[in-house]
Length: 225
Image (tube, rainbow, N blue to C red; front, top):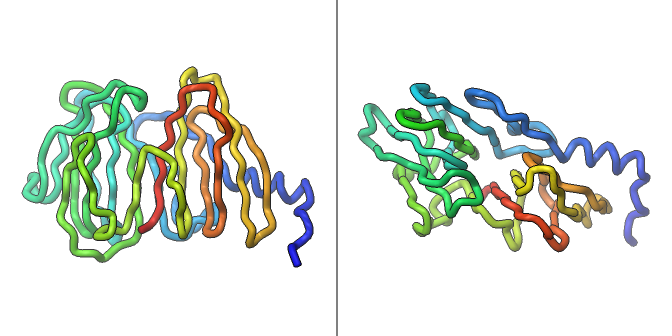
């Protein structure tokens, strides 16, 4: 038999735990990390650099996918860029064409430099020990998902087998769209409003469907392969 509907109080608690509001800030902002909001194997944050600023990180035990949301930067992967090196990004914002991306394997250093203009970069992570090469992907380039720990797309996935994180932007920024969240396993079902810079955490066995969209909507979809 199906479980009885979850009480409204419980649904409100789950809604609060599934959504975050990203407040843009300088530098790197970690938004969702593994171990919170029902997410066990994904991390998501956004990096904002002004001209002349840089960001350096070691991927540790994670695979990293960088997605340039707006602006342009220089990327050096490995020591002095010996694994990959190039300029990435050529759009003003997420509604101005497809993104430049970069896939960086575990235990690899990388540096992002905003040499000539500000840049905003989504930083997506998943645990991985796969021996993959660092790859810079231009808009439209194919990406062999089967060889990587991360699946990152600028359109909502048709289906997922595990957990996911979704980052939304709307134009105009004061608009909203309706979204249906449900889980047959937990007998959870709810419709919520998605706003600009909302971040949705979808634990395993949770699904999300957008209602008819009457405003410009951008969705960055992150899941494990």
